[in-house]
Length: 422
Image 1 (cartoon, rainbow, N blue to C red):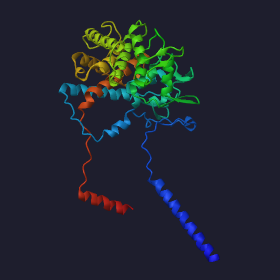
Image 2: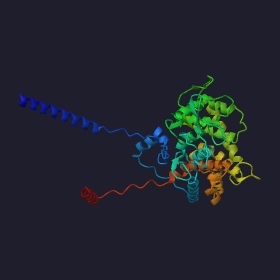
Image 3: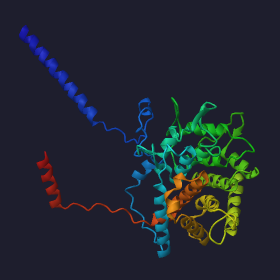
Image 4: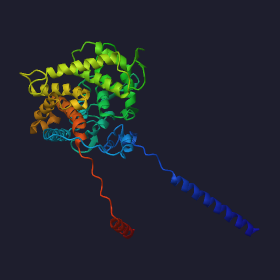
Protein backbone atom coordinates (compact mmCIF):
# COMPACT_ATOMS: atom_id res chain seq x y z
CA UNK A 1 0.00 0.00 0.00
CA UNK A 2 2.74 2.42 0.93
CA UNK A 3 4.59 1.72 -2.34
CA UNK A 4 1.40 2.31 -4.35
CA UNK A 5 0.77 5.53 -2.45
CA UNK A 6 4.32 6.81 -3.12
CA UNK A 7 3.99 5.97 -6.84
CA UNK A 8 0.68 7.85 -7.06
CA UNK A 9 2.12 10.88 -5.30
CA UNK A 10 5.13 10.84 -7.59
CA UNK A 11 2.88 10.79 -10.65
CA UNK A 12 0.78 13.68 -9.37
CA UNK A 13 3.91 15.71 -8.63
CA UNK A 14 5.27 15.04 -12.11
CA UNK A 15 2.00 16.16 -13.72
CA UNK A 16 1.94 19.32 -11.62
CA UNK A 17 5.51 20.22 -12.58
CA UNK A 18 4.69 19.60 -16.23
CA UNK A 19 1.66 21.89 -16.09
CA UNK A 20 3.72 24.68 -14.44
CA UNK A 21 6.40 24.41 -17.11
CA UNK A 22 3.80 24.54 -19.91
CA UNK A 23 2.13 27.58 -18.36
CA UNK A 24 5.47 29.36 -17.91
CA UNK A 25 6.46 28.59 -21.47
CA UNK A 26 3.20 30.00 -22.84
CA UNK A 27 3.52 33.10 -20.70
CA UNK A 28 7.06 33.63 -21.93
CA UNK A 29 5.94 33.28 -25.55
CA UNK A 30 3.48 36.14 -25.24
CA UNK A 31 5.08 39.31 -26.65
CA UNK A 32 3.78 42.56 -25.15
CA UNK A 33 2.43 45.17 -27.54
CA UNK A 34 4.85 47.92 -28.42
CA UNK A 35 3.35 50.95 -26.69
CA UNK A 36 4.93 54.38 -26.31
CA UNK A 37 4.17 55.52 -22.78
CA UNK A 38 4.20 59.15 -21.74
CA UNK A 39 5.85 59.91 -18.40
CA UNK A 40 3.31 59.05 -15.68
CA UNK A 41 2.20 61.53 -13.07
CA UNK A 42 2.15 59.84 -9.66
CA UNK A 43 2.23 60.91 -6.07
CA UNK A 44 5.68 59.41 -5.82
CA UNK A 45 6.86 61.51 -8.77
CA UNK A 46 5.37 64.62 -7.18
CA UNK A 47 7.94 64.58 -4.41
CA UNK A 48 10.90 63.95 -6.69
CA UNK A 49 12.68 66.79 -8.42
CA UNK A 50 13.73 64.52 -11.27
CA UNK A 51 10.27 63.18 -12.20
CA UNK A 52 9.80 65.11 -15.47
CA UNK A 53 13.27 64.84 -16.99
CA UNK A 54 14.16 66.14 -20.44
CA UNK A 55 14.63 62.56 -21.62
CA UNK A 56 10.89 62.10 -21.13
CA UNK A 57 10.05 64.31 -24.07
CA UNK A 58 6.52 64.36 -25.40
CA UNK A 59 6.50 61.88 -28.31
CA UNK A 60 5.18 63.15 -31.62
CA UNK A 61 1.59 62.13 -32.30
CA UNK A 62 2.59 60.30 -35.48
CA UNK A 63 5.43 58.27 -33.94
CA UNK A 64 3.82 54.86 -34.70
CA UNK A 65 3.30 55.87 -38.34
CA UNK A 66 6.98 56.65 -38.81
CA UNK A 67 8.07 53.13 -37.90
CA UNK A 68 5.47 51.66 -40.28
CA UNK A 69 6.79 53.70 -43.20
CA UNK A 70 10.46 53.13 -42.44
CA UNK A 71 10.65 50.23 -44.92
CA UNK A 72 9.62 52.43 -47.86
CA UNK A 73 12.42 53.68 -50.14
CA UNK A 74 13.55 57.15 -49.18
CA UNK A 75 12.73 59.89 -51.72
CA UNK A 76 15.61 61.60 -53.45
CA UNK A 77 16.53 64.79 -51.53
CA UNK A 78 15.71 68.09 -53.21
CA UNK A 79 18.64 70.18 -54.33
CA UNK A 80 19.39 73.54 -52.74
CA UNK A 81 21.07 76.37 -54.56
CA UNK A 82 24.30 77.69 -52.96
CA UNK A 83 22.34 80.73 -51.75
CA UNK A 84 19.67 78.57 -50.13
CA UNK A 85 22.29 76.27 -48.58
CA UNK A 86 23.94 79.30 -46.98
CA UNK A 87 20.54 80.50 -45.75
CA UNK A 88 19.88 77.04 -44.26
CA UNK A 89 23.14 77.20 -42.31
CA UNK A 90 22.29 80.66 -40.93
CA UNK A 91 18.80 79.52 -39.89
CA UNK A 92 20.08 76.41 -38.14
CA UNK A 93 22.88 78.27 -36.33
CA UNK A 94 20.34 80.73 -34.98
CA UNK A 95 17.92 77.99 -33.96
CA UNK A 96 20.71 76.23 -32.08
CA UNK A 97 21.58 79.45 -30.24
CA UNK A 98 17.95 80.10 -29.32
CA UNK A 99 17.34 76.50 -28.23
CA UNK A 100 20.27 76.63 -25.82
CA UNK A 101 19.00 79.70 -23.95
CA UNK A 102 19.30 79.12 -20.16
CA UNK A 103 15.60 79.26 -19.24
CA UNK A 104 14.90 77.90 -15.75
CA UNK A 105 11.92 77.49 -13.42
CA UNK A 106 13.48 79.60 -10.71
CA UNK A 107 13.81 82.85 -12.66
CA UNK A 108 11.42 82.46 -15.62
CA UNK A 109 7.66 82.46 -15.04
CA UNK A 110 5.01 80.42 -16.87
CA UNK A 111 4.67 83.09 -19.55
CA UNK A 112 8.38 82.86 -20.41
CA UNK A 113 8.33 79.05 -20.47
CA UNK A 114 5.18 79.09 -22.63
CA UNK A 115 6.96 81.30 -25.17
CA UNK A 116 9.99 78.98 -25.09
CA UNK A 117 7.67 76.04 -25.84
CA UNK A 118 6.14 78.01 -28.70
CA UNK A 119 9.55 78.20 -30.32
CA UNK A 120 10.64 74.58 -29.88
CA UNK A 121 7.54 72.55 -29.05
CA UNK A 122 8.16 69.07 -27.68
CA UNK A 123 11.93 69.56 -27.96
CA UNK A 124 11.94 72.41 -25.44
CA UNK A 125 14.43 71.75 -22.65
CA UNK A 126 15.00 73.97 -19.64
CA UNK A 127 16.58 73.82 -16.21
CA UNK A 128 14.35 72.93 -13.27
CA UNK A 129 16.46 74.98 -10.89
CA UNK A 130 19.26 77.40 -11.68
CA UNK A 131 21.35 75.92 -8.85
CA UNK A 132 20.99 72.18 -9.50
CA UNK A 133 21.11 72.31 -13.29
CA UNK A 134 18.58 69.48 -13.59
CA UNK A 135 16.96 69.39 -17.05
CA UNK A 136 13.23 68.99 -17.69
CA UNK A 137 10.94 69.13 -20.72
CA UNK A 138 9.18 72.46 -21.19
CA UNK A 139 5.80 70.97 -22.18
CA UNK A 140 5.96 68.65 -19.18
CA UNK A 141 6.77 71.59 -16.92
CA UNK A 142 3.64 73.48 -17.94
CA UNK A 143 1.23 70.54 -18.17
CA UNK A 144 2.33 69.06 -14.85
CA UNK A 145 1.84 72.46 -13.22
CA UNK A 146 5.38 72.76 -11.87
CA UNK A 147 6.02 76.15 -10.21
CA UNK A 148 7.77 78.64 -12.48
CA UNK A 149 9.09 81.69 -10.63
CA UNK A 150 6.48 80.87 -7.98
CA UNK A 151 3.59 80.69 -10.49
CA UNK A 152 1.50 77.58 -11.19
CA UNK A 153 -0.26 77.75 -14.55
CA UNK A 154 -3.11 75.25 -14.17
CA UNK A 155 -6.30 75.61 -12.16
CA UNK A 156 -9.79 74.05 -12.08
CA UNK A 157 -12.63 75.86 -13.88
CA UNK A 158 -16.08 74.62 -14.92
CA UNK A 159 -15.10 71.12 -13.80
CA UNK A 160 -12.09 70.96 -16.14
CA UNK A 161 -8.43 71.87 -15.99
CA UNK A 162 -7.69 75.29 -17.43
CA UNK A 163 -4.64 77.57 -17.58
CA UNK A 164 -4.71 80.89 -15.77
CA UNK A 165 -4.64 84.18 -17.70
CA UNK A 166 -2.66 87.20 -16.52
CA UNK A 167 0.81 88.41 -15.67
CA UNK A 168 3.18 85.46 -15.32
CA UNK A 169 0.66 83.03 -16.89
CA UNK A 170 -1.00 83.15 -20.32
CA UNK A 171 -0.98 86.49 -22.05
CA UNK A 172 -4.48 85.74 -23.40
CA UNK A 173 -6.96 82.89 -23.21
CA UNK A 174 -6.37 79.69 -25.22
CA UNK A 175 -2.67 80.48 -25.68
CA UNK A 176 -1.43 77.27 -24.04
CA UNK A 177 -3.93 75.16 -25.99
CA UNK A 178 -2.74 76.75 -29.24
CA UNK A 179 0.94 76.12 -28.41
CA UNK A 180 0.19 72.47 -27.57
CA UNK A 181 -1.66 72.11 -30.89
CA UNK A 182 1.16 73.70 -32.90
CA UNK A 183 3.61 71.40 -31.08
CA UNK A 184 1.60 68.26 -31.88
CA UNK A 185 1.18 67.23 -28.23
CA UNK A 186 -1.11 64.14 -28.08
CA UNK A 187 -4.58 64.66 -26.54
CA UNK A 188 -3.92 61.87 -24.01
CA UNK A 189 -0.87 63.62 -22.54
CA UNK A 190 -1.37 64.14 -18.78
CA UNK A 191 -2.25 67.53 -17.31
CA UNK A 192 -2.57 68.09 -13.59
CA UNK A 193 -3.47 70.56 -10.89
CA UNK A 194 -2.63 69.48 -7.36
CA UNK A 195 -4.02 65.98 -6.82
CA UNK A 196 -6.28 66.22 -9.89
CA UNK A 197 -4.88 64.50 -12.97
CA UNK A 198 -6.55 64.79 -16.37
CA UNK A 199 -5.33 65.06 -19.98
CA UNK A 200 -4.90 67.64 -22.73
CA UNK A 201 -8.27 66.43 -24.07
CA UNK A 202 -9.91 67.56 -20.80
CA UNK A 203 -8.37 71.02 -21.23
CA UNK A 204 -9.80 71.15 -24.76
CA UNK A 205 -13.25 70.42 -23.28
CA UNK A 206 -12.83 73.63 -21.27
CA UNK A 207 -11.99 75.48 -24.49
CA UNK A 208 -15.25 74.20 -26.00
CA UNK A 209 -17.29 75.28 -22.98
CA UNK A 210 -15.93 78.84 -23.22
CA UNK A 211 -16.85 79.46 -26.88
CA UNK A 212 -18.67 82.81 -27.02
CA UNK A 213 -20.05 84.69 -30.00
CA UNK A 214 -18.37 88.06 -30.60
CA UNK A 215 -15.21 87.27 -28.63
CA UNK A 216 -11.68 86.72 -29.93
CA UNK A 217 -11.44 82.97 -30.55
CA UNK A 218 -8.43 83.03 -32.90
CA UNK A 219 -6.09 80.99 -30.67
CA UNK A 220 -9.00 78.78 -29.56
CA UNK A 221 -9.56 78.01 -33.27
CA UNK A 222 -5.91 76.95 -33.62
CA UNK A 223 -6.41 74.46 -30.78
CA UNK A 224 -9.84 73.21 -31.87
CA UNK A 225 -8.70 72.76 -35.47
CA UNK A 226 -6.09 70.33 -34.19
CA UNK A 227 -7.92 68.54 -31.34
CA UNK A 228 -11.70 68.74 -31.89
CA UNK A 229 -13.04 65.48 -33.38
CA UNK A 230 -16.74 65.61 -32.50
CA UNK A 231 -18.94 67.13 -35.23
CA UNK A 232 -20.53 69.51 -32.69
CA UNK A 233 -20.50 70.46 -29.01
CA UNK A 234 -22.26 72.78 -26.56
CA UNK A 235 -20.79 75.68 -24.60
CA UNK A 236 -21.50 76.19 -20.90
CA UNK A 237 -24.61 78.28 -21.77
CA UNK A 238 -26.09 75.58 -23.99
CA UNK A 239 -25.12 77.12 -27.33
CA UNK A 240 -24.43 74.71 -30.20
CA UNK A 241 -21.05 74.93 -31.89
CA UNK A 242 -19.14 73.37 -34.77
CA UNK A 243 -15.68 74.08 -36.13
CA UNK A 244 -17.33 75.78 -39.10
CA UNK A 245 -19.25 78.10 -36.78
CA UNK A 246 -16.03 79.16 -35.04
CA UNK A 247 -14.58 79.95 -38.48
CA UNK A 248 -17.69 82.01 -39.32
CA UNK A 249 -17.44 83.89 -36.01
CA UNK A 250 -13.80 84.76 -36.66
CA UNK A 251 -14.66 86.08 -40.11
CA UNK A 252 -17.47 88.34 -38.92
CA UNK A 253 -16.29 89.78 -35.60
CA UNK A 254 -14.34 93.08 -35.40
CA UNK A 255 -10.58 92.54 -35.27
CA UNK A 256 -10.38 93.91 -31.72
CA UNK A 257 -7.66 95.76 -29.86
CA UNK A 258 -5.52 92.86 -28.63
CA UNK A 259 -1.92 92.86 -29.89
CA UNK A 260 -1.57 91.01 -33.19
CA UNK A 261 -5.30 90.24 -33.30
CA UNK A 262 -5.24 90.29 -37.10
CA UNK A 263 -2.34 87.86 -37.53
CA UNK A 264 -3.70 85.56 -34.80
CA UNK A 265 -7.02 85.45 -36.64
CA UNK A 266 -5.22 84.49 -39.84
CA UNK A 267 -3.27 81.79 -38.00
CA UNK A 268 -6.56 80.35 -36.70
CA UNK A 269 -8.22 80.44 -40.12
CA UNK A 270 -5.21 78.85 -41.80
CA UNK A 271 -5.20 76.09 -39.16
CA UNK A 272 -8.90 75.41 -39.75
CA UNK A 273 -8.63 75.38 -43.56
CA UNK A 274 -5.62 73.05 -43.38
CA UNK A 275 -7.59 70.74 -41.07
CA UNK A 276 -10.54 70.54 -43.48
CA UNK A 277 -8.18 69.99 -46.40
CA UNK A 278 -6.55 67.11 -44.52
CA UNK A 279 -10.01 65.65 -43.84
CA UNK A 280 -10.85 66.06 -47.56
CA UNK A 281 -13.95 68.04 -46.59
CA UNK A 282 -15.56 70.42 -49.10
CA UNK A 283 -14.26 73.99 -48.77
CA UNK A 284 -17.64 75.65 -49.20
CA UNK A 285 -19.61 78.38 -47.41
CA UNK A 286 -17.59 79.57 -44.39
CA UNK A 287 -14.47 77.73 -45.54
CA UNK A 288 -14.69 79.26 -49.02
CA UNK A 289 -14.91 82.71 -47.43
CA UNK A 290 -11.97 81.87 -45.16
CA UNK A 291 -9.89 80.69 -48.13
CA UNK A 292 -10.66 83.91 -50.03
CA UNK A 293 -9.86 86.00 -46.93
CA UNK A 294 -6.49 84.27 -46.52
CA UNK A 295 -5.64 84.79 -50.20
CA UNK A 296 -6.52 88.50 -50.07
CA UNK A 297 -4.55 88.88 -46.84
CA UNK A 298 -1.51 87.23 -48.41
CA UNK A 299 -1.54 89.73 -51.29
CA UNK A 300 -1.92 92.63 -48.85
CA UNK A 301 0.83 91.30 -46.54
CA UNK A 302 3.37 91.15 -49.35
CA UNK A 303 2.40 94.58 -50.63
CA UNK A 304 2.88 96.11 -47.15
CA UNK A 305 6.30 94.54 -46.48
CA UNK A 306 9.12 97.00 -45.76
CA UNK A 307 12.16 97.16 -48.01
CA UNK A 308 14.35 95.50 -45.35
CA UNK A 309 12.04 92.46 -45.28
CA UNK A 310 10.24 93.40 -42.05
CA UNK A 311 6.62 94.35 -41.32
CA UNK A 312 5.24 97.10 -39.14
CA UNK A 313 6.16 100.75 -38.74
CA UNK A 314 9.19 101.35 -40.98
CA UNK A 315 10.69 104.33 -39.09
CA UNK A 316 11.21 105.33 -35.45
CA UNK A 317 10.61 101.79 -34.24
CA UNK A 318 12.29 99.62 -31.63
CA UNK A 319 13.87 96.39 -32.77
CA UNK A 320 11.81 93.93 -30.63
CA UNK A 321 8.58 95.41 -32.02
CA UNK A 322 9.84 95.10 -35.61
CA UNK A 323 10.97 91.51 -35.01
CA UNK A 324 7.69 90.58 -33.34
CA UNK A 325 5.56 92.12 -36.11
CA UNK A 326 7.58 90.27 -38.75
CA UNK A 327 7.45 86.92 -36.93
CA UNK A 328 3.69 87.21 -36.33
CA UNK A 329 3.15 87.90 -40.03
CA UNK A 330 5.34 85.02 -41.14
CA UNK A 331 3.87 82.46 -38.72
CA UNK A 332 0.67 82.18 -40.77
CA UNK A 333 2.34 82.80 -44.13
CA UNK A 334 4.71 79.82 -43.74
CA UNK A 335 1.68 77.65 -42.97
CA UNK A 336 -0.47 78.76 -45.90
CA UNK A 337 2.10 79.07 -48.71
CA UNK A 338 2.40 75.96 -50.91
CA UNK A 339 5.80 74.30 -51.07
CA UNK A 340 6.66 76.02 -54.34
CA UNK A 341 5.89 79.43 -52.83
CA UNK A 342 8.19 79.25 -49.82
CA UNK A 343 11.16 80.59 -51.77
CA UNK A 344 9.46 83.66 -53.20
CA UNK A 345 11.36 86.96 -52.71
CA UNK A 346 8.99 88.27 -50.02
CA UNK A 347 9.35 85.13 -47.91
CA UNK A 348 13.13 85.06 -48.29
CA UNK A 349 13.44 88.73 -47.32
CA UNK A 350 11.37 88.10 -44.18
CA UNK A 351 13.45 85.07 -43.17
CA UNK A 352 16.67 87.01 -43.80
CA UNK A 353 15.43 89.92 -41.68
CA UNK A 354 14.83 87.59 -38.72
CA UNK A 355 18.20 85.84 -38.97
CA UNK A 356 20.03 89.18 -39.35
CA UNK A 357 18.20 90.69 -36.37
CA UNK A 358 19.64 88.03 -34.04
CA UNK A 359 23.13 87.96 -35.52
CA UNK A 360 24.72 89.44 -32.38
CA UNK A 361 26.03 87.77 -29.19
CA UNK A 362 23.73 90.00 -27.12
CA UNK A 363 20.55 88.66 -28.71
CA UNK A 364 21.78 85.08 -28.90
CA UNK A 365 23.04 84.69 -25.33
CA UNK A 366 20.82 86.71 -23.00
CA UNK A 367 17.27 86.31 -24.28
CA UNK A 368 16.09 84.37 -21.21
CA UNK A 369 16.86 87.40 -19.02
CA UNK A 370 15.18 89.98 -21.27
CA UNK A 371 11.71 91.51 -21.11
CA UNK A 372 8.58 89.53 -21.90
CA UNK A 373 8.24 91.41 -25.21
CA UNK A 374 11.76 90.47 -26.29
CA UNK A 375 11.33 86.82 -25.23
CA UNK A 376 8.06 86.61 -27.15
CA UNK A 377 9.63 88.13 -30.27
CA UNK A 378 12.56 85.68 -30.14
CA UNK A 379 10.35 82.61 -29.70
CA UNK A 380 7.89 83.60 -32.40
CA UNK A 381 10.98 83.90 -34.59
CA UNK A 382 12.12 80.43 -33.51
CA UNK A 383 8.68 79.00 -34.38
CA UNK A 384 8.76 80.54 -37.87
CA UNK A 385 12.31 79.35 -38.55
CA UNK A 386 11.56 75.83 -37.29
CA UNK A 387 8.54 75.53 -39.59
CA UNK A 388 10.52 76.96 -42.50
CA UNK A 389 13.37 74.55 -41.81
CA UNK A 390 10.99 71.58 -41.77
CA UNK A 391 9.24 72.59 -44.97
CA UNK A 392 12.19 73.83 -47.04
CA UNK A 393 15.54 72.58 -45.74
CA UNK A 394 14.82 69.17 -44.17
CA UNK A 395 13.60 67.70 -47.50
CA UNK A 396 17.04 68.59 -48.91
CA UNK A 397 18.98 66.80 -46.14
CA UNK A 398 20.76 63.61 -47.22
CA UNK A 399 19.16 60.39 -45.91
CA UNK A 400 20.83 58.83 -42.85
CA UNK A 401 23.62 56.44 -43.74
CA UNK A 402 22.84 52.75 -43.25
CA UNK A 403 25.39 50.78 -41.18
CA UNK A 404 27.82 48.86 -43.41
CA UNK A 405 26.84 45.24 -44.03
CA UNK A 406 28.97 42.70 -42.18
CA UNK A 407 30.97 40.26 -44.26
CA UNK A 408 31.19 36.54 -43.49
CA UNK A 409 34.58 36.96 -41.76
CA UNK A 410 33.23 39.82 -39.63
CA UNK A 411 30.32 37.62 -38.54
CA UNK A 412 32.73 34.80 -37.63
CA UNK A 413 34.86 37.18 -35.58
CA UNK A 414 31.77 38.53 -33.79
CA UNK A 415 30.61 35.00 -33.01
CA UNK A 416 34.05 34.11 -31.66
CA UNK A 417 34.16 37.22 -29.45
CA UNK A 418 30.67 36.41 -28.15
CA UNK A 419 31.72 32.84 -27.25
CA UNK A 420 34.81 34.14 -25.43
CA UNK A 421 32.78 36.63 -23.44
CA UNK A 422 30.47 33.95 -22.03
